[in-house]
Length: 132
Image (tube, rainbow, N blue to C red):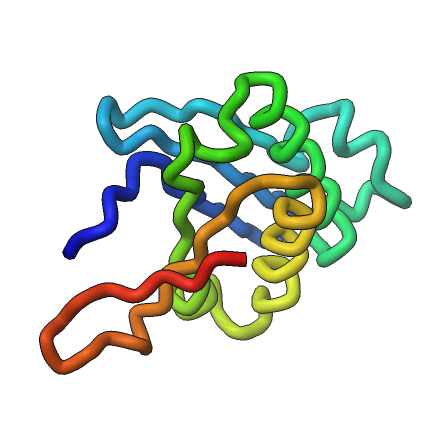
């Protein structure tokens, strides 16, 4: 049985900035976003350091608040999906703490985040999702 992944969390991490988007896969639109590029977030960080784990946590908290305002913190009952191992591989192991900081900030603020584990595929190729 396949799991419908309507809402997906996408991360963009560069040397200077961190951006997190929740994308509606039905129509390809971004429904909520938070980034250290925004002046309100950037000004709240110490010494303008906008690409460390602490900044990633702030991005996760702001994204969680924006999802609550939109009424999407539960992902319309299906949750918001993210493949953590894929994101860490794409971003590199040096950004592992930033990825987990965003995940933990979202979870601690009540977002129903479903972490997809591609490492746990059965022989019959069915996806298993870990729900936190």
